[in-house]
Image (cartoon, rainbow over all chains, first blue to last red; front, side, top):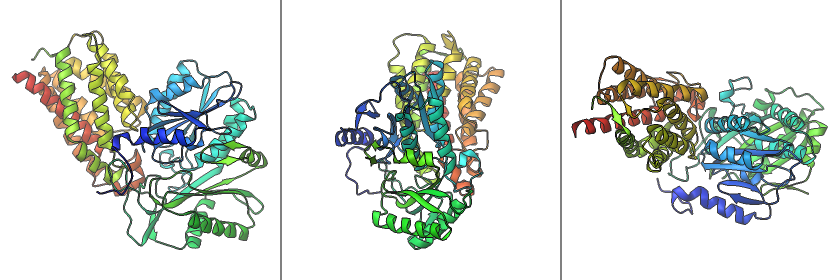
Length: 332
Length: 216
């Protein structure tokens, strides 16, 4: 299949993109092998945050490396997890008495490499704990863990756990805060136009011109309901209803909502969707206390967006508001 | 060759397996496009390159040292599930081979069973879950039967390849329970699993490699 992409040899995609990425954001990050680390390391008395995952989702995940968020992002290949040895190396490099939190997204390859690396690090005497993000609710909140993928919510979790670490909290405290946010968050994806795999041109999923799929996976995997393409307001309502149905939310509660463009859905559309969400919540007496719109985790030129919703408390809000300086997101 | 494979024999059988998988890279990518993200062929190609690199870099004549190097090399590829799964298989094979200098059919069955066990430490897949295990388990069973029957390594590997191919073919009937295809639910039925297919190609390549050594 012909692709209109400005690339070179497909097998060099990841390395070339990482070299460019590190150059573009050199005040915040630097490259060590295929691992993106902070340009200025965090002091050793603070908990370190490490994650792993495939490339092709820029700015995520490496765009979250920097002050107030991740310390290291171990990059695999396009949409493919890194091998366990690279993750072990990153855990060795960030090793400290304060401890390290390894954040794994629930995708088959990430979990296999992450778990293998975690076990090896523990055996090597590294003080490390792990957390698995799995906030996809396309199969329902109580679906088996295998059906609950880790989606864009990780970006917010890195930010909140990162702020807790910067504040000097202990590893146990950082884990508890991260787990609380992890339990609070829900994400649903709507896909409108499938992406192509940048290395081989394969179309990731199929959708007719007049269709959308609510519950589509991060890479265009099927899984949800294919339906006729709807307006921004209608799509926001369908998705928010599905999400709120899995949450205990009452009038007076405070919610965080993120509308994350998947690559081909514009900031214009994202803002129109966020407006719809705000109006729907207002009608229910629920406060939209914080929000994010933009492209944080993309899948090439996929059309569609991820809606991530999380119940917030005062501590989570304060951590969300704390300063951070990363390529993908900055709070001053 | 009824006495089994020595160091060079095992290396050439693994190289034949790698060559056979590489010849099917495009087909594996096509199969993966139907239910996954279309890169299984690339991932397996990379795993096979890593496997051969492990053999190339071995500076001793110890089968175990060679296999340990192969396992480490395969585990280090950045290719999603393929690295940890194929790496674990090779790790189990390397650990169980001991200080053997020649691999007969009985030992071949033993080390592949150990490899399967190591793989199942990190994968919860069972037969019928539409994964590489659907080809690997029947292949290991066939090796054990052939070992009990006193068959040659080449005959045992040919039967293992037949069993793996039959197992891969059967995955068309199954609904995926692991990996990205899981989220397709019933829509995964009718598609042959790329992981089972590549595992069958691996065994077919080994069988052909062993047969050509026997005939040479």
